[in-house]
Image (tube, rainbow, N blue to C red; front, side, top):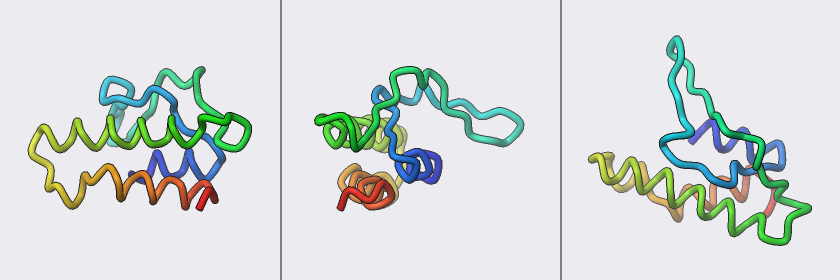
Length: 87
């Protein structure tokens, strides 16, 4: 959640986030495949992409047994929208 919130704080969302775009290297989380990152303010569908990213990543973790409270796509979408000053 922290890494996607940091991206939102900078005014962007990944745009095509999935578990396949999240790597761990030397104990650090790395997002890859960022050329399609979406500007949340300039793109009229910015919030739609942000919501899709939240649904995709939360759904992946939920399918693998993460507590539903910790991987709630609605809560993640709200957190990201707030981080991006969209709420």
